[in-house]
Length: 194
Image (cartoon, rainbow, N blue to C red):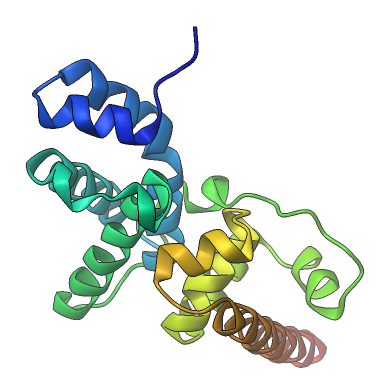
């Protein structure tokens, strides 16, 4: 039996079918959570954002339109706005020491580019900290393309930006990460020599 499409599940959800919600949650929870975790650096914020994104869909299923992309992309878009709002309202900043963040960072397939070589030499916590330092528009694209392994087209649809902008932001994000990781490595090496 073929599993129902995203649109079919959302229609069932709109009619009050809680099994449809369960299936949507099972399909989309981890990508939404990983995105929120990478964008915020906080497991607590990621849990809260994930819950709020699904509650938004539960309250307003008509907000999803299959014409604008996949359901997971829609939910990540909702999570994107929630993360931004949460981080703006946080008075004391975001902790990079959240328990379990290192284990949640997926290892992307590495090539031999300067960024990939620099990333291979860093711990997950160092990468997460560097990721949180690059500007948010670049971070979003790096998280979606490199860590969530979305295609450029899926990323463009999720963020509501042109395909060329995705490519440009990804390139700039890679350069920013490479610069940060290189500076940290130099600082660590000079500190070790003393």
